[in-house]
Amino acid sequence: MNNIEIIDRLTSINVWTSGTRRAPHKPLLLLLVLARCSRGEPREISYREVDQKLGALLREFGPPSRSYHPEYPFWRLQNDGIWLVRDAGNLALRAGHSDARKSELLRTNVKGGMTPEIYDALRNDHKLLVDVAQAILDAHFPATLHDDILSAVGLDLERSTSSRAKRDPAFREKVLRAYERRCAICGFDLRLGAVDVALEAAHIMWHEAGGPDVECNGLALCTMHHKLLDRGVFTVSVERHLLVSQDVSGSQVQLEQLLRFHAKPIRDPQSRDFMPSPKYLAWHGNQVFRKPARDS
Ligand SMILES: [Zn+2]
Image 1 (cartoon, rainbow, N blue to C red):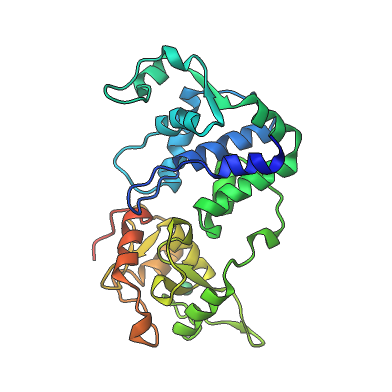
Image 2: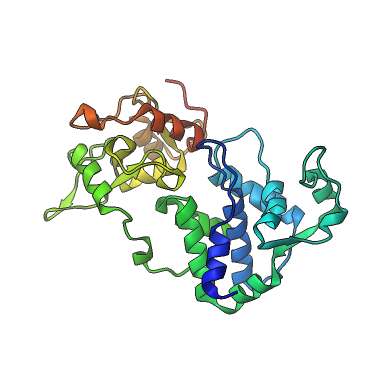
């Protein structure tokens, strides 16, 4: 397998989807093992370690859920031709499924890992590992979250910022124009000369989740509010009110600055044609926002 084939194989994994629900399980497990690989740790990782570490990653970067399933990618990556589970044939399966039971994975603490061929190639070529990790991030998460995810898995890519260059300058321009070049939350509009500084076009439904590059899926936000939106610190209801998560805490000043906007309408765009679509707002509320919201 050459490098291009390896990148292709690792980025064309079959990600389970149900409608527009996010399923970041396999991408996060791969980033976790890429980090281990970059540190020179053994090829195989035990299921208990995956259960604990991937469980924490899913809670932080996955869609809010009542239960998390680190066992799914640990087992199902086998079908993508890049992953092996040791003695897989000896494990008890879930009734009516082709997956091993989570209790069985925990009890036996079975080990799994990337195939030796792929692991060795990544181990011996740091640039390849960086390219693969970047491609996985680009395919599944907005750029505002990349550094947070890398730091959570313990992977330092030493990337140049050019690799995170703005993907679609036309989308950015359309959205900033729609909001008259001001943050839709706080009104931030600092310019340096004639250039907007720290003002960004955010996707409401992530581009990585299939959200289109249109005004009604965009918000002009300052860098901070963009980041907080993508992390699920707040959402915007279909009535276009900002709602802050109950999980958010902070020192008096920072929290007050955020809560000032809670339960209040965000700024409207200059034309009704650009109004955020309820469909995309609902997606963010279900797939990104850390439910529940504080009382209004
Ligand atoms: Zn702002």
